[in-house]
Length: 358
Ligand SMILES: [Zn+2]
Ligand SMILES: [Zn+2]
Image 1 (cartoon, rainbow, N blue to C red):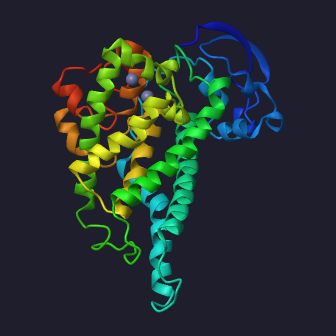
Image 2 (cartoon, protein in one colour):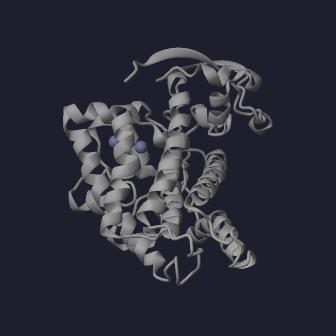
Image 3 (cartoon, rainbow, N blue to C red):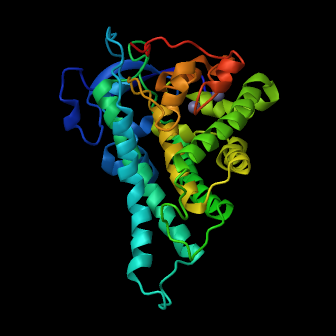
């Protein structure tokens, strides 16, 4: 982990119109302690390289990077139905385009079915579009509601040295997850996305079980990397931020990347198999939950699939839970990323500070 150093960065005074600064260029001097060096955010947008420009999409408004007065109010509650509607609107178009294609192009045409390579390219692009919309959605919540613990420490910028690796990992992550879903789900080019066929009516239950299976594998992997010093070195990179942003969900060393991107979803799929189209929907929901958990947005948010089912057992996860996990560093707690089922069973919960539901 990099040492804490003091850097002078340029930030706007709080009462200025932060939203007018669309390129997130800070404008007045303030001394603030940074954990990592992030000189790239001080460069004018035009002087940023392509990777820095892509990382700019992850920046919320300036207020998220400046210590704020303590908010005496509990975090507002986000509507789970609003979030489910947002997910449906963002996920459905890709599936509808493929289904419409199969409906419109005659069956005897050479172009009627989609070759697996065409499907991979199409759903990979659709996944990236989904992630771009997701980042916009999350930074909007961060801007409007602020972030957890903002009265003590604001969000961390992506460090200079991590900008390129993070963008590269996003590309790797999206392609591996898209291809893996098509392979594991046994993509059949003659089966367009149709409810009751390639997408089961029982999908909400199937994905709920898949997410819990995923959390089971993730919990033990995650607890192990926090417990054993020889494994911590592979995970410590992810903890180089105490207050992450959506893009930093994917901050990881190479070995951690392989385990998290490929092996854990593979384990979940052996327990609860999904079809190729179901898999793609699951990937979108997974990345949505990951992004939410790393946004630090100061809201009471419910996991859109399993949150309400787990809440009576106090096993539901909220944004503050993973935010606390980052604040606690190696000492850990809150190891689950989809739920607190296993944290509750094995007594590794860190109680919430601000996000206590009223
Ligand atoms: Zn961790
Ligand atoms: Zn994390």
